[in-house]
Image (cartoon, rainbow, N blue to C red; front, top):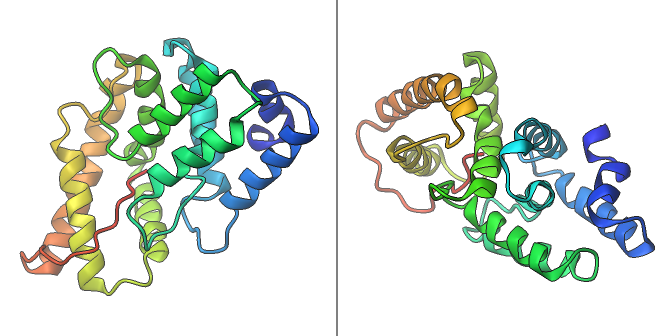
Length: 221
């Protein structure tokens, strides 16, 4: 995939032996066999949307780098993947890009834990909107995404997963603005909210109204 090829990476982090090694390690992490949704296809999709929305960002290259790292650490059994991904970004980018940009990448990766970018956070808006774009897909594409997420949490019982997924969906539906950028919000938000509400209704029916089991899934996009 061109969007995750070395040329795309080198445009951000340079062409050096260290950069080539880091690119290979990042792609290796994204290709771990336990990933069913948070895989190289998701990375490419987010990078593609970031590219489309880049004019809205204050630092498009920082957003692109944050996309590369936003799920670089992904273990469904843990709840600190965003923090660990942010630290992986800080370590991996040291010496490849200016320190100020590294810290912005770290901040952006951490922001994907809640996808609640502030009103003046242009970089955060672009990254979060790109990461959550999957929620606004056609119903069949959304169903495939939800099914893939369930596969990633195969270690949880149906009751545990249902409770956790309900919490994720309620959080997303509770956001004041699901998408921040006006150029996408008008089209994407109604579709996303319809998809989320439909899944939530199905899961609540499955749970019989009980949603207090611990160990919820954390990732939405």
